[in-house]
Length: 285
View 1 (tube, helix red, strand yellow):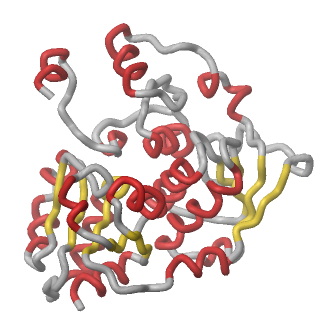
View 2 (view 1 turned 45 degrees about the vertical axis):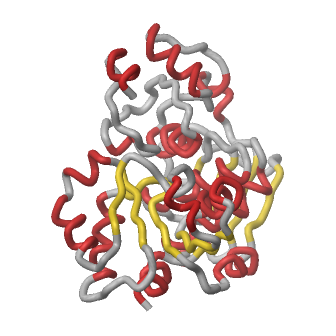
């Protein structure tokens, strides 16, 4: 960290740097965090490949990155259509699970989703999960994401895959867990607000950790205080898949398709996905 400080790097240890700086449409980046890459490309319309840590650091030092891959508009067109059963009626809590299933089906192709209307935090959850179970660095959502209009041509010739309701619902079979963790990727201010509301008047009975960028936590002190009055802890600068604290538990409930994919291998714990309300209920029951 001190070495990075001497290089002039802003010391925010977060997987959601887009909450700390407005990245513009069409801007060229060199980002290495897979969920942030998916968000930058898909939700913001910026351009970056999936960089490794060393290549991203090298790009920061010299102010340049190789012009190939997703920096070129022609390489950003959709390659597979994803149809989601239930479409526009799906709740925001389902999108991480949908991405968990979809990523396995699309691999490293660029998908375009039809007939769905997720919000920004839902798009974050969708892309993060697809980056974890597949290798998705860019996705489009018809009539929602900024570049969907750029590639508004008939998709009849593309491969098509379906994410069924049964494939999603089976992931939500609630089991007993030792701890609960949310914020993978790190929570937005809106997600902190939702958690504060869900926890109002409740007390935790299991360890409950909420992971967030320090910049988001410090600009929302009232929300952090409201959450922590329940006994839950808001943790900046790390996350559930890299923090040694999570290695203490053999089973963890998460609200994220990305965490569902990574927790077993990186924490050595069984992972169980739940909606955000279910996570709060389990943590306080």
